[in-house]
Length: 129
Image (cartoon, rainbow, N blue to C red; front, side, top):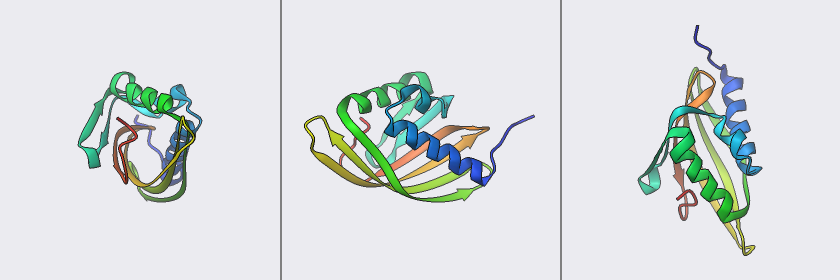
């Protein structure tokens, strides 16, 4: 029997994901993904394969590049049983204290209770290289 999330559960998964990213909690962030997940930064034609390889490396680099990351002011649109689109504001504080602000939109595809694909459209520079 396959497990799936209702609309509130899908939004909760997205919120849990962003909270773990903001806390720079790599294990909690990766726990939101299926092992064979993909993560695409569409605005920069960049694709990462695999939770424990490509996606892990991307988040390790993000966490080493910034002293603080914050995602907020969310607007979620849910298409149950397995899709969420989220528009939001991002604030990245570099190690030197300078601030980079972005307005992004992510499209999440969910298999069971975890992401199997994420597509990111971001303003400004690519903070996920």
